[in-house]
Structure formats: structure tokens, C-alpha cells
Amino acid sequence: MLESRLISILRQNKDLGVKISSNLGKWGFTATKISNEASFSTLNQYRLLSSLPKLAPFSRNFVNYGLRSFHQLNHKGVHGTSFRKISTVAAAAAENKEGLKFLVTAGPHARKMVGIWLFTSAAWVFSMVVLGGVTRLTRSGLSMTDWKFTGSLPPLTEEDWLVEFEKYKQSPEYKRVNKGMNIEDFKFIYWMEYAHRMWGRALGIMFALPFSYFLRKGYITVRLGFRLSGLFALGAGQGLIGWWMVKSGLEEPASEYVEPRVSPYRLAAHLTSAFAIYCGLFWTALSVVMPEPPAESLACVRGAAKVKRLALPVGILVGITAISGAFVAGNDAGRAFNTFPKMGDTWIPDDIFSMKPLIRNFFENTSTVQLDHRILATATLAAIGGLWLSARKLDMHPAVRHLIGSTMGMAALQVTLGISTLLSYVPVSLGTAHQAGALTLLTFMILLNHTVRRPSPSLLKTLPSVAKMV
Image (cartoon, rainbow, N blue to C red; front, side):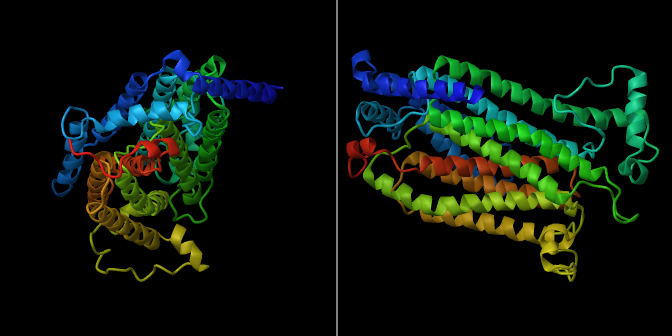
């Protein structure tokens, strides 16, 4: 009954979108109104790119280069009219039979509201990843030995705290790692894990309530509705995956000499799922507020197509490198071989294939896991560097060019953070920054791939062969 009602609402939204598109001229829906939305999407790109932390000296120039150019795009000047041109052709596309199919109906104000909600949700997931990193690095993740889907109140009295502490004392982590811990130290790790869990539940409420509101208002199309429903279901499943991961750390290790920790496979599944939710939310938010990619001319479109052929595989490589980092964390491999560029006294450790069957080494062998992550990180930096160099010779929109430069700077920063974290024996601050940096770099790759999409046929018809010189 609920599913049929949801489908009915979404179909009504789709019909409303068709009516809006066919009557835009009657309603006086001019290019000026869409211009406001294009400016909004430009502002979001600028804020995203300008939120980077302070860079290492050798990488700061790359990002500064990109940020300066993005700043110029928001003022009158050489490229000041390029984004305004996008808004005018978007209006023309909406009135054309081949026009753009918006994910959100009811005009630019509705798209702006939905876009803000989706960007906020993506930022919330980002904060969840960061908080999860802090929880792991402070060894707080195994402090709560039970789990309820809806959550529960924290201990409120000293007696409640003693009960929770007694539960923790029965865990392998207390017996082998934290034996003798006092209750004040236990409260710290308990609050860390509790905050991580409740922050995730709050995200579910923050996502579900606006989603219901926008459905009732008729803003969301069928296609967007099903996409967001899938992301919501994946987010609900994150709690189950998280507990499945924690439960593996509450089991007795196979050997008395092995330190209790969660399964690296389950940790990788938990982190990969979080990254997938973030990517889905961020891509969808971009599609809502920026339905057309930036394009000044057909030459820029051809240049963007060439960049796309490189950007997609590079983005996949960035994702694989991030997942390999989850296995580094799961095996606590960052606290081994704390030297660079060599691993100890050798380039390649002797025991990288010591486990049987062979495939286990790539996921469970500390030496192999860290070597893999080093190789993938180096390959990622080289691939992004190659993308940056090849793009310099192409005709493309200034926004794309400077975004590539900023991505190069972020890649250099991320490698710097990784090396610093390793050499410093994984302090909480650097380890957390490195995990956040991985998601930030992935954000840049998502933004780049979204920006080099092929424009709609209506937009292509309005573009000159070569950009006009201003």
C-alpha cells in the first residue's frame, strides 16, 4: 500500500514537470530566473573548492592556481560572462522538445531548496566519515558491546556507567589491550562511539523529513525519487554493517598473541558503503543545481570529452586507492614500516606472499597491504599529474581547467598527508586528516566528471564553434 502510494505521488510529480516545461513561455519563465540557479551552482563549486586545508609547500601552488581562477569566475572580467551564458541556454532548452529533463519540478526555487538539502546531507555523511576515523584511531569503536537499531539513552547515573563498564571488561579488547583502564578513560571511548552512532541516526532523520516534505510538495520526479530512496535504504543499512563490523572485534582472536580488532573486510565494507552514499548524494546534488555542464563553445565541448575519457578511469583509481586504505586501517598496517620511501631497510619486504592462499596477502598481510597502498597512491598522483599535463593543451571551459589544477593540488596534499601520517606513527590528527583528504580528493574527481558531461542537444545547438574573446 505504501509503495503504490509512493509511486502514485512520484508519477504525479513527473506529470507536473512535463506541464511546467511545456508552459514556461506562458508563465514568463525567462533566462533571468534560471540565471539565479546557475549562479547558485557556481557558488557551491567555489565554496567546495575553497574549503581545502592549508597545503604543504610543494602542493600549495597547484590549489592556489585553481582557487584564484575560480574566484575570477565569480566577478566581471575575462571569464565573468561564461556561467551566465549557461543560464540563458538552459531556459531555451527547457522550452525545446529536446530540452533538459530536470530532476526537480516546480522551478528554480524548488531546485535550490532540494539542492541545499542534498549538499547538506552529503556534508553530513562527510562528517560521519571523519568522526568514524577519530573513533577508530582513538580505539573507541569496541567500547559499546551491544546495539539497537533505534538507539538508546546513554548511561545517566554512576550505576549505569558501572554496568556498561562491566560489559566492556568481558570483551577481548579490555583483557588484552586496556586491562586496568579506569572508568573515566572508559567514559571517553564510550562517548566517542555513542556520538558516532547517534550522529548517523540523526542523519537518517534529517534526510527522511525533508524527503517526505518535497514529495508532498510535488518537487521530486520519479527518477530522482527512486534514486534517493535507494540512497536512504543504503544509509539505513550502514547501521547494520557498522554493527556487523564491531561484532567481529568482540570475538576472541584465533591466537593469544593477536590483538583484538575488527575484520578488515568488514571495515572496508563499512567505509566503502559510506563513500558510495556520499558519492551518490553529491552527484545527485550537482545534477539538481547544475543540470547543464559549463560550455562556451563546441571546441570546449570536444576538449571536455577528451578530459572525460581520462577523468573517469582516474576517478575509479582514486576510489580503489581509498578502499585499499581501509584495509591498511583494518590491519593496523600504518604502524608497521614507518619509513619512506623504503619499507624498513628494503624496497619490498620478503614476506609479502607468505600467506596461503595467495589472495589473502592482499587483504590480510600487513606488509602486502601497505605496499599495495603505497603503489596505488603513487599511481594515483601520477595519473592525476598526467591528466593535468594533458589538459593544458586542450580547449576547455575555464572552470574545467582550474578544477583540474585544484585536483592536482589536492592529490599532492593527500600524498603529503599519507607520508606524514606514516612517519609520525599514525597520530589521531594526521590519520583523521588523511582519511578526510581521501574523501576530499574523491569529491574533486566527482565534481570534475560531472563538469565534463556532454551538454544536452538544445545547448549544443546554441554554442558557437569557438568561444568569443571578451
